[in-house]
Length: 512
Ligand code: C2O
Ligand code: CU
Ligand code: CU
Image (cartoon, rainbow, N blue to C red; front, side):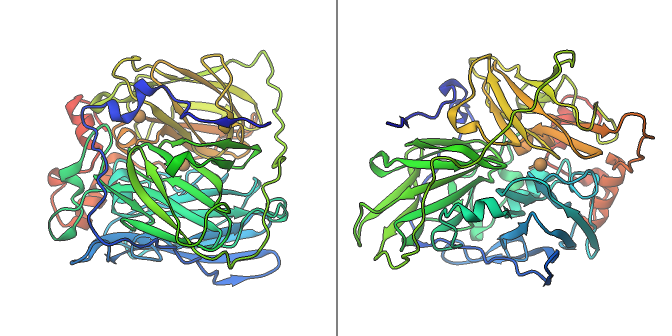
């Protein structure tokens, strides 16, 4: 008999609900509306070996609430974006277009691509009106990843406006597993975000800004409030992405309906994990398969976070008869050996509010904090130095590679984090050991993925290199250059400029 897990695994003391600034979600009193299923982005061209896309960051208006439309940003769409599919077997070419009024960057969260240029962190601005071409080949398993803006320290604000969309990687192995995979029918993107709507249904990021992470009071699922989905297949795969600035999602269904988690951030899990509750911290992904076959047409099954309904599944006739299965073996994962002589890298996530830091320093774009040779397998100990009382869970993320979670305070990792990951949540006073190997030469950021913590300086960067080879030169962004560009684009003097992370540096009397 396989076990059904019935808890969220994490330390309840560290939940974001324990913070004084927590805003619970309220279900808006509007008519239920169909869940937005973003269109799939069409390639410009596809051959047997190559695929070409154009990804455009643009501004627009989205009908979210009754009445006035909300001004939002998105990729090839007015909010979030079209879903991008990259087959890992092909050479990928992307034209990045910025049609926003200000600079942005295109970060491929979860993709093993070299940084800083292709990875799209803070050193890779695309200016308004500019087109930039990148190309890369992927060597990693099928998984659910995402694209988001990453101009530090304005990442939080740009994502809040809507710049976050799904990026699926596909491969032969996963296609052959016969999991639910009909997009929009039995395989759904579920982007979890929260927003507060002000006068005329508009967002006001600055009014809602919180240095410990900006919360909204309304759940926005793929840009939809009070959403429902018509179920026409007995088994439905939900690809959850926590795309919120700060909110943790504690997901469960009516009557604790069990579901199977099949994948985490960067791969399938070795085996499906049956559970009734799932917590996702910022930037994490989880794919689950829900079996609705015991229900009949007319039934409804609600999905909740904490006590709030965020999405309703309306059962219809099961007209989608495509047989799907969740196999007991999903993926074989080999743990590479670590040379005992290799030192353990220690990374601390320190402080809360404006005092957030990484290894006791605030992020500086033109300072490189660490170096690691390509191909070396190394343990990293990620330490959350917050106290057990009143501390927060910090989700640690690193660019440019995937890692394996080895232990939590010396004990086994949670059962649903045994696949490849790029984000791992660390409880207050906990040390999470991960196994890290970079395969690409580059410069990569690592940080807490509570967006206001990252903008506020709980972030650092690591350079990877091939021993014996001449060091690459990187053109690093500086705060001065960034501020000049933003001020010019907004038509204001530089000293009038407000970017979300700035307050944290100023209050701590630190330079950015
Ligand atoms: Cu989701 Cu530095 O990234
Ligand atoms: Cu990332
Ligand atoms: Cu944090």
